[in-house]
Amino acid sequence: MSTSGATAIRRRPRPRGARQSAAVSTLLLIGVATAVIIRIAVTGATWSSSAGATLLFSAILLGLAASSGWRPGRPGGRALGWGVVGAAVLCAPPALLRLLGAHSLAPPPAVPLLGWVPTVLVVAAAEEILLRGALFDAVTAMFGDAAAVAVAAAAFAALHVPLYGWGAIPLDLAAGVWLGSLRVASGGVAAPATAHALADLAWWWLR
Amino acid sequence: MVVAVSGRQCRLLFLGAGVLLLAAVWLLLPRTAPPLYDSAPAPADPYRFLTSSPPAAVAAKDVPVTGASSPPFIAGSDENPPQAQILVGAGSLPLPPGATTVRVTITPVAPPPIAPAHQRVDGNVYRFALTASGTPVGLRAGAPATIVLRGPSGAGQATVARFDGTGWTTLNSTPIGTIADTYAANVTSLGDVALITSPSSGGGGGGGGGSGATVAVAVGAILLVLVTAAILTIRLARRP
Image 1 (cartoon, chains in turn brown, orange):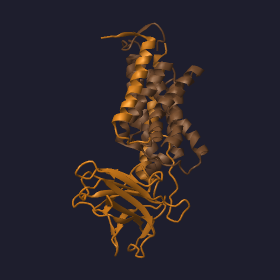
Image 2: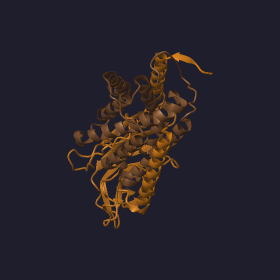
Image 3: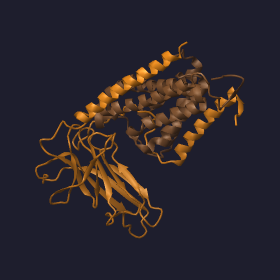
């Protein structure tokens, strides 16, 4: 994306490679859906608490991203700063509600925190690399940043339906748009991945 | 129409849209999901029995009454996920005149001396009770409440049952798909409710298993190979 000078929110489709980008986008979305189905099938009703299935899911997403040609850039301090700000925005509403006592929250889970953290970091990074990395690049190449934010956010919300139900769609959609906007603002995956991972870790205290 | 904006303005537009959308969802919509936005595994607490340490939680919730009819509410115990929950619809309770609050309590109690026929109680027995401004109330006819119970892991197929003081009545129960060992049932009256299983049952809960899951994984794996191959083919075709 352009970082300076005049640009346009709606970009003209690029003639060369446009079809290929659309095809890659579609294939990546099929891949994400397949990864969700495999995750559920592997562990059935316990899928939400199965670290093994989560890591398998993450590996599939990373494999899909790699096959599409996505390669990690070098995250700078600015991107990580965007990520911290992004996490603060994601965590502010539940933190405020908790401080104000607007809803009661359960005590931390009775499982080891250290055993949970690596899985959370891996799945957050994998989702961002696939959605705000590979898929975002493919959609941007044809339709521009706005479409990429929308498509990645929709996919992000959809892949959480089996875990949280349809009622979580608005929240996950909004979070997806925010993570996509971090991608646009920072120009890379490091910012949304950092925000995503930190917000997920904060769940331990904010749930 | 194409709107020309600077790169900085473009970034601010996206960030502003993201913040506004998040704020709108948190302010306007009921909270239906935990405050995380990801499918990170939510580790379940070990099952807490009445006698374990810490013991199973007692839940009590006061719901304000604002109109003439009783409000809808959900209450549950503090475990993650809750071991006992109740969902009551609007107007389901016959309120005494002047009632300002409805109090729901969910208390784990010792199992009654009468065991269910050819079955065993799986986990705690929970006593569900409702009062309106201190007066005990029941459910209106034709307005059932839904009770959700989570049992100890690996208990196998279970059923929600209600103890009426003389015996156990099994209720039409539905497993909650995304939470292991958890079942929901509608009740027309409250009281002591528990999950029951057959004594031979056990170890069957949880895992996906089964030929259906195996087929799904196999088909999914094949589809993934095809998707990956297609993406690689497209990438190779792009090269000059």
